[in-house]
Image 1 (cartoon, rainbow, N blue to C red):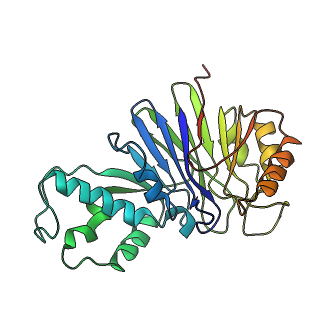
Image 2: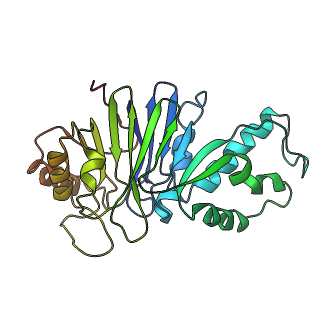
Image 3: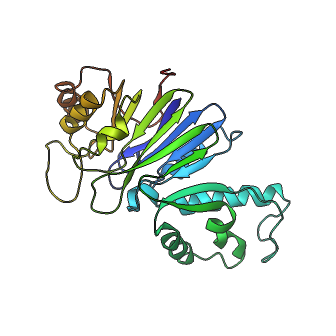
Length: 276
């Protein structure tokens, strides 16, 4: 599998970097993991000939899901153009057979997205207001569920955050990639990361914090990677782009994990091979 970083910032975009978003490819299957502000733009710079197989949202915080609306409108615009419908176009004719991209969100996410879309109506082309109906196939997942998308099996692991958050473990062809979303320290990270060839984990804090909000420091991430036997640790969800701050976070993780450690940055790509 191949993981490409689209955005890696905690909270809002900063320093020219988008918020959370990662493109994971396994054969012909392409998954977008989270879609924070700036990710729709970053995704548009990728190969447009290969369609998304699904979009997966770890939790409903703004920095992980806000660009779903522009992404949905973009996908729907492309689909309508292929059907010969351009702006302003008919207001009520829906072409038959429009492809829809599965959009996997936590329970309750469908209603949240409907309210978001209603805030920004396109009165001259109301079809675009139906992006979450026509461009996406919205599916709500639950902790503990497993979903097959193309060549990938996705398993959702409930973690510890101020709002419901599931890490996702993606397996294909004997390889495994684990992504945390946002979480505080918890033993629930271990089955998510167990033996994964690549562990993509948030690293928001410079020091561990046992508080209720739920975020990791690099030292926490290093401990999880070591205990779970991960092959490679990729740190992300940074609160700073300062080179010294980032270097210190890699050093913090390395005190606990002796395997390869990488710092996520937009455009960087990581690969993990079959493990069986």
